[in-house]
Image 1: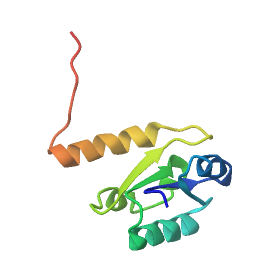
Image 2 (image 1 turned 120 degrees about the vertical axis):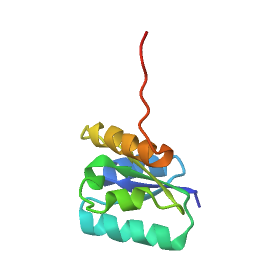
Image 3 (image 1 turned 90 degrees about the horizontal axis):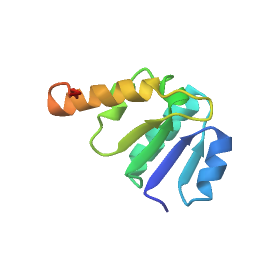
Image 4 (image 1 turned 30 degrees about the vertical axis):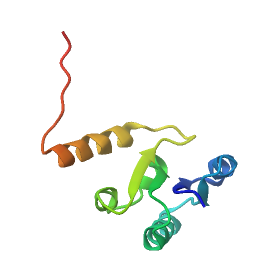
Length: 106
């Protein structure tokens, strides 16, 4: 069993399964929530990749992302995206460091 899990569309799940990642095909919020709860309760995985399209459906996403027992990373899927990922990363960095990180050019 892999310590890495992927939650997303079946088309991507099939490809990642070939790489040895435990995959869970989900298309909508109820099955995504149930899968996430099962993964967290079983405590077999340390890292979960969750597609952005599914992440946007979860009303308590911030709570899920800050759980200490598991790392959930939001990734864009074959439908595009990426904006939510950067926004969540910025919020998590601010939460972890207690402030924003800015990079100055020049």
